[in-house]
Length: 168
Image 1 (cartoon, rainbow, N blue to C red):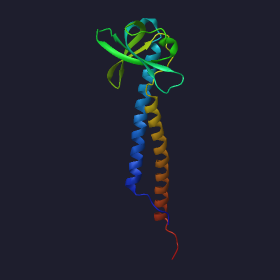
Image 2 (cartoon, rainbow, N blue to C red; image 1 turned 180 degrees about the vertical axis):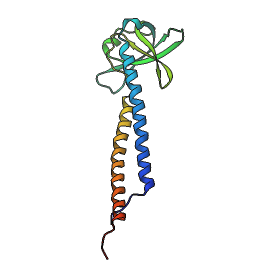
Image 3 (tube, helix red, strand yellow; image 1 turned 45 degrees about the horizontal axis):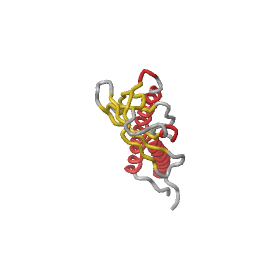
Image 4 (spheres, rainbow, N blue to C red; image 1 turned 120 degrees about the vertical axis):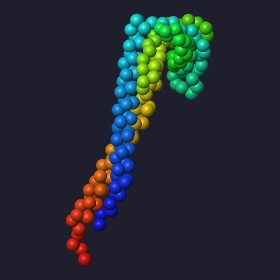
């Protein structure tokens, strides 16, 4: 006789699969919106100036990267602090307290306002939501496999109950 999967296990795996699908869909859409907003920063309309607060070398990274912290103001006058990774070529030109040209835009992220900024001529890509999207993609694939297995075992279990073997 084929072993059956209890219905509560199959339902839990299926509901986990649905949860991961919904979360992957939400995170993927927000990541796409952030990428579109980040690519808009290349437009000269969003030019702004910022003041450098701190520059730190990122340890154990190759090629050598630096982290630059700067403050800038939005259109409504609020002051925002931001940080981003910069390569050595940009680092050579910067000093603490200098004014630098950036591009900034205000966007929404899961319903909250968010200020995106980028130092002009910086080619480093920001770590937006790729890791979270990758996590939910892995969860979707894992629970898709588990859902398929549990439904397959559940179907075999019901088949063995419906058509019992003729063994005595």
